[in-house]
Image (cartoon, rainbow, N blue to C red; front, side, top):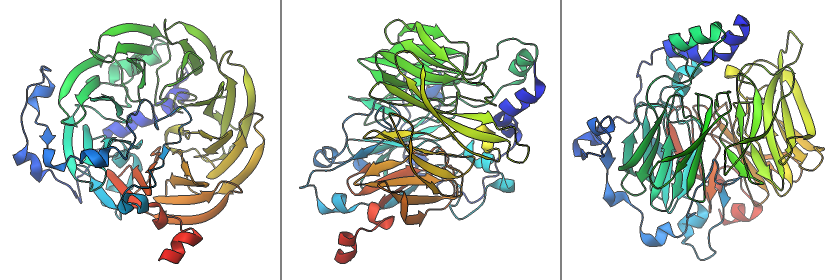
Length: 493
């Protein structure tokens, strides 16, 4: 085996040796004394208290103003989680609400990670991939092991469920259930040795679990444990859950009971490639070997798989694909051959039925991003918007032919997708800022500094509010006008 390749691929593993000094803890759970201990039927989870504060639930009237379901990462296959509110919605929702919520162990937004190490925070107390917002409640996973539910108007905690491993996924919400998956990005010693001996390893030591929780109380309904990590966001469709894991399988479970329907052996482990559905297939990226897969959603049979040369580290298994109109879009990281700027990102548009490359766009060469990560594409009205964590550029490309419409130099690493509403893309990036970009021409029309840092923390817009989490362990809600002011809103002020 190629040891240098392994060291690159396992960059995340090394962070497990770092210990977080919980300096500046801003949200200790003094509320623990008010918690209710419950027996869920899960012998492990029953040992840990969960938090439930029903007084913080939204009213029925408020709940009706928000999305009613969340079935995939960033709410939809195009990955643009932006929702209008009715014209007669109360003014505070149309104008936008403002609050901040810090999970247990969160770091001050104006501070620095212990020993200055970004990954220490990102993989210990971070909320790395964004929130889900359904029926007046904001749901978010935290690498400290919790899933939180907060009132979307006030930010007050409704419940907190502890999952015994990192939560790097969007919680899914269907009916009265919330579905959460957990797992860690590490390889333990035994699996490292397997890899070096040419054997198939399993990524994600510890208790890796797919949970079903009650939407309003957070109580466990069922739990399904997998040998490998469940870091990607699952996919819900027609009463079933699909999840890619660190043991090289895609799982299909009955959503009401957690019963296994099938598991498909794809060999590759799914690092952080949240599944997307389209054209009758389930799509996901896999690592070692680096392939992009299409599986028949009914049988789990691999319909096709594809790869490209020169992929590095986690290659194609770290990007969450987007789908629209028979085309699936995925980003990969490749070796550039330039010693001073050793890697580049490549965006692929694939025919969903065949896996044939329709077009590909190679972005600028640059420095190695943390753990060789990629960014999340979004598709809105036939346009793909995508960033590069290598070069700090943000692009707009025609979905049909890949022609570049514009690019904007942000300068900081970009891993998040954007949320687009009313002609403006709102984009978080590593420097702890959110940019407002005019999508007709790529002009930067606003920037708001939040602090901390953003990884793949795709934002959500509902009405006049943007909701976003970050790797320092915070969820922030803010009016869109705090980021970008139109002439009309400026006049009002």
